[in-house]
Image (cartoon, rainbow, N blue to C red):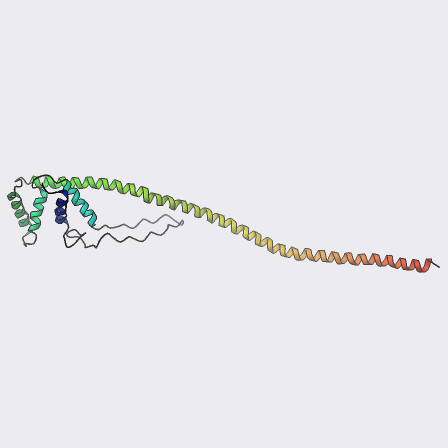
Length: 232
């Protein structure tokens, strides 16, 4: 076709996404843009196995819709095909015709614009577009796996490291608490020993001084008596 991939992409996008409902496919629930980020999951405790993550539901995203339209445009062959048929079908959607009449009228319009009279042209090209989308999906899946390995895997490694570090610190805290308890018990014992040993030493000093005085007094008494009695 003479049209550029970009203009074809915009036309293809209009087949699947209504202009007044950006980011929403026909028949899908309206969204205002990418889904809001979910709050971070709580750090799993060591008390049991991790709970499975809640299942997430997707929504039609305008950036992916534009991407798919570009993929389809790049795979659009020359001449009328499934997309020209779909364009004709879309133009009949507001006429109130039964679904079968819409498809039959679109088929007639398709042939009138020079399209093949063989209906398999439509199904073959439609399946070709599905194949192109599947190929793109395979590439996207690989990039998702790579992102999970790089980002989520890195976070999981950090999670394991921090959990192991916390376990080690908890064991150290237990040992430290045991040492604190032992020190506290020894301090209590020391306080009693200080009182006991201080009392013993004080008593021993008093006994020393009393005994000392006893000896000195006896010697002094003998000196006095020797002076008194032996100088006569």
